[in-house]
Length: 299
Ligand code: NAD
Image (cartoon, rainbow, N blue to C red; front, top):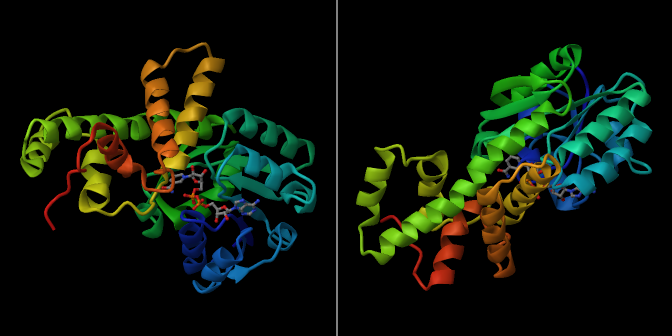
């Protein structure tokens, strides 16, 4: 089994790295927040106090970080992963970032004799906890074979979408629907509440027609509709993804009016202090805007 360096031990990275440990991989984890490293150590991981220490001796280095700027800095910046990785090592970025960042990192890796794979993650944080994530992989065939055992240890569904960059582009397509549907759900349930309808009955109807969607059916009943707005996936990160989507579409001269409107609805939620809450709390953000008490399922 290859030795793994894992950088970014937050809501997603911590359970993913812990699942690698559980399946027998030797994992050294680093996070800029010492509490995150301590939490990983409590899950039987080996903690590191720097990127250099996490990367030393690793055949594969995984990054699970918030955004493009941080991934660039940690992977390609001075004292970063590339600077410390052994020749022949493979770097797998599993964060959600701008695909042009992925393209540039893949090219920079190749120039240094390193391999680069993008493998962003689908489904919810609760799936990552359970080792049931879905992965969208951009990789050369040989690199895909090399990372497959790690992905099998962290998830249950793996799609090889194409060469480096294809995983990240697929992730943007996926997250447009997954994230924009939160705003549509919020508007639909606010309308139901304003019209005086029973929430449970309304949901039963929506789940039985083509109106249903994964957020409304899988995420919301145990999150905002149950009064739990802890992340999960923050509104801040969902806003970042919608921004990546709108920017990628603009660069491709592709209009996406609903993505643009959804991004601004998330901008409004952030400006009003909802950024740290789960993205299902777009319900609460929208209800606050229109003067409604957010609907909740009976306990
Ligand atoms: P998070 O904010 O919980 O975790 C990110 C971690 O990175 C934090 O622990 C932070 O301290 C660490 N970090 C920040 N800068 C660092 C640096 N310079 N060096 C080392 N560590 C650093 O975020 P998350 O929810 O785990 O998401 C991580 C990535 O995965 C994001 O790109 C997100 O869009 C994506 N994603 C999240 C989910 C989800 O449900 N949460 C699902 C799929 C994809």
